[in-house]
Length: 261
Image (tube, rainbow, N blue to C red; front, side, top):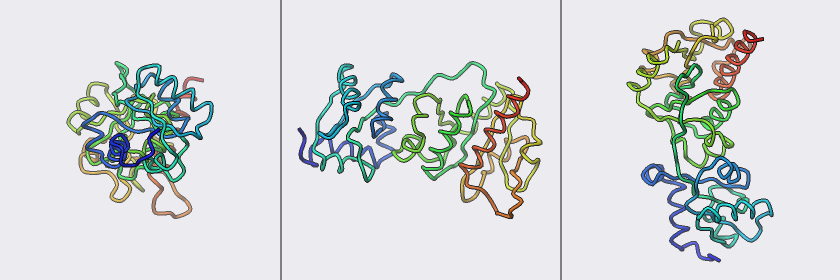
């Protein structure tokens, strides 16, 4: 059992928790809790290290054993060391360092989401969770967007990372993809363009949501074909970016479901 927070493996985990550059260079990220570790396992993602403490549930111990059976090093740690390694205030007894990989995308994409300079980890994670639920086929992450594999994003996304292609791309590549797939590109912009219910979301499309503070950037505005807005009769200036994105994504679901009914 590891009982010292100065252990090199614990120091490595703590560094990965806080340093996005190191996560990118080593192509790993961290999941915490039985549910997320179990989803990583069931989705076929590989672990480089699994930490667990003596209070872990039977369900969690089965996850540890399964990862160990695949060859992942599994280390029992004291509860104090787990608290030191964790990014949460109340660790759930298991933490895994998972190898990043980019999921394959469909040859033809007709429903994608573009996160433009989203800096709040909780917002981005919620967007990814909503995107998975709505059937988005891929999410493009533009320069300036928070690291999609940061601990807070991973927790907020609730497992979306394991089933939804996340593509960090520059605008030149996104533009090339738009031309290849013939997307109509809709940009969420408060008070501009069509009310979102009046837009035609049945065609191949990309939805762009801009950053929380300044909205969409110049590249996004130049690439978009049509701004859309969410009417707010209550007089609020704007909606939370994650909430706005969910409303728009599920309007796509509504329109397409009605067309196919």
